Every structure is written in structure tokens, then in C-alpha cells.
Picture 1 (tube, rainbow, N blue to C red):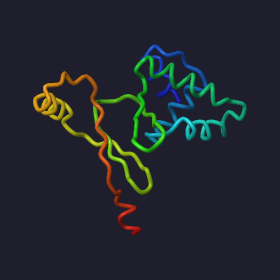
Picture 2: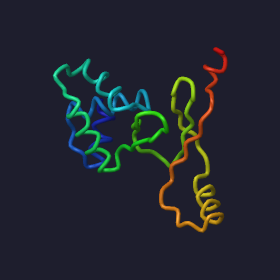
Picture 3: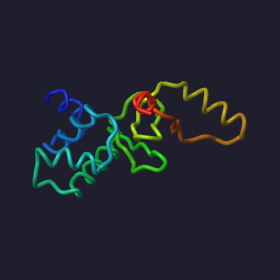
Picture 4: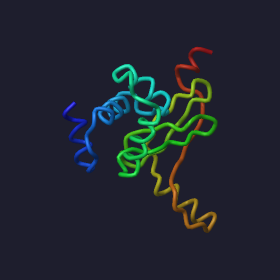
Length: 136
């Protein structure tokens, strides 16, 4: 728990039991929707409201402590902010995983090909995960 308290304090975010619970869940599950977070946290804090979870997520995103992952066809997922990376999502089960790609090269190639001034970097690839591939 001290690890999570330090992470929040180092980002100038007030430490609350609800925020600690959110960080702990995301550290264990990596990508979760607000509803998934709410259901998990409600086990520890039965009186917590969905609005409180939204408010805390937004406050931590405003500080750059966590970020939204917009997966096409799914509700947004959230993760703790870390080094720039991309995502791969399973078309069957919806699992989202981080992948390390050279986003600078992809961004530069896209800018060169289109002459756009690329400002945002979010790359999500889709396919079938190994577990779903084996199951079929």
C-alpha cells in the first residue's frame, strides 16, 4: 500500500482510500473500464458511488497519473501512465495488452506520408489472442 501512496504523492495527488483502491486495481489488472473499477472497488467500499469513481479517475487523469485507452467498439479502459506504448486488443474476448513499438518512427512515417502535423499518438492493433486462438 505504501508503494501506491508514494506514487500518488510523487504526482502531487492527494492520497485517499478510494484513490489507493483505484491504483491498486489498475496495477493488478492494467486495463479496466470505469464500471469494472467500480465493481472491484465496491467490494472494499460498499458505499462508494460510481460518481466518486468517475471524479477520482478524472482528477488523476488531469494530473497525468493515469490515461484513457479508447478501444474501438468497447468502453474506454484506463491504465496508470507509463512510457509511451501501443495496445493490441483481442477481437474475440476484448483483452487489451500493452506492446512496445517505436511510436516515434510510426509518427514520423505518418507525418511524412500525409504531411500532417501529428499531435496525438494512440495506436491500437486488433487480432485474436493466443488463448482465444487455442480455444477455437
